[in-house]
Image 1 (cartoon, helix red, strand yellow):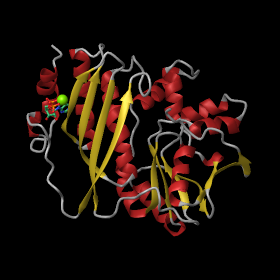
Image 2 (cartoon, protein in one colour):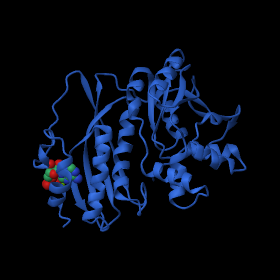
Image 3 (cartoon, protein in one colour):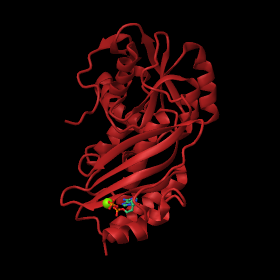
Image 4 (cartoon, protein in one colour):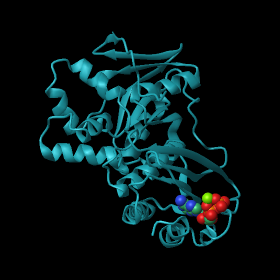
Length: 324
Ligand code: ADP
Ligand code: MG
């Protein structure tokens, strides 16, 4: 039994919003407008062989799907409430794989307070493909764009950078570290941890903000471009996990290692700018909610993203991951 209607009725309907999803029995979902708020939407797709590996368990694929979208909303300061889901099942997605997928959705719905609103279900002879449209609210006119950075602002990033790239290498068997570290990295690659609790801080203090998904340097560069400013980053300040530190120590060229971490994708952290006078308050508030924030550099007049290592300029050929 893997029919479209059985899948919707048995597996997806229990995840639906009790009113807005209409039991997944209608053609549409209906979300009442919320006075005083803006509706903020984002969409990300995951393709087997590109964003997840063919042997990744489908519960983790479902979690990654929600989390990469939640990361975009967090970077804008938005609070998520629900999502639309498109599933393109490949031949390997039998009933029990679909059950696994739904288990992952259910787990993260509980963690992040979001509910399923509707979607589409198809089969494909090609690689499995999943896409979600995540929706959230921000108080009216308070969404934080990429375009608000001004010279003198400080540049920060949440969490740690590089575990996404190392996690992919670990999952592909291309990394030599002890097993505990490898397992933690693989789990991070499969199930990144979006900084959703940080959204109110972004709203309150960030002048510009971006989700770090393609590579820290590439994504910080998006702020520079959108804001019409220059950004100077000090590579040695890149926050690295203990596993990342262990990996760096095994490398002859520290600068090249750091550059690989700062240009690898799949981190799902938030890079943002704050006014210099807000820096202390940011550090205090972030500590209260136990989110690590690290200062990386500053916004300057001019254009472009400039990387330094121990004071010397670094040429960056590929700032991050791009699809053709
Ligand atoms: P259509 O004929 O317009 O494609 P469907 O029969 O595919 O409509 O969908 C019927 C209902 O099931 C709709 O409410 C739709 O939103 C919901 N639905 C279909 N697939 C999914 C899914 N993957 N996740 C959530 N809801 C879904
Ligand atoms: Mg359909």
